Image 1: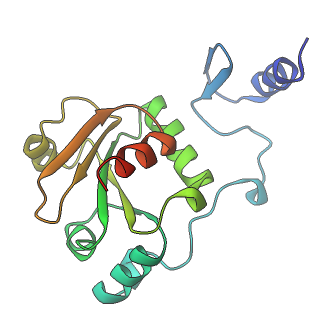
Image 2: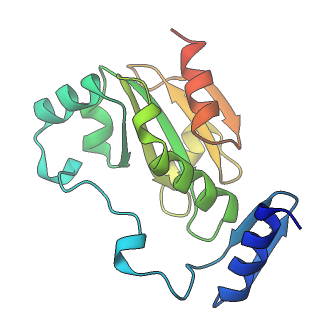
Length: 166
């Protein structure tokens, strides 16, 4: 048995809830029961809710960022490449993409802002951009017009799709 298979079998035995196993991938609906606070992901202390618009835009231009969608944060990021990530809390693919973005955030190019947009609550945005299912990404211009829309993927696809527009 390979190391990956052994790890997957070990991880499966530790789950406190159902999991979906795909070839080469384990998608779990909850954290491992033995996870300690030190093993869980944290969000940076300074979020968009504590920054004023100018400071937020300057920070977003200097490094890529991943923030929760609010109209104010979206407007403040006009000087960056803005990507809406239509995320649902109940969607396993969205959870995997969210984890990948957080894990690899340092790879996000400066001037790219990803907005984690609640698929279930942002109905007006879904209608505006023609979103029919979760785990959809939309790259928008300074006026909010969709430049590119794609379904599925992770940070690698976001980077590839924002590079093509430059």
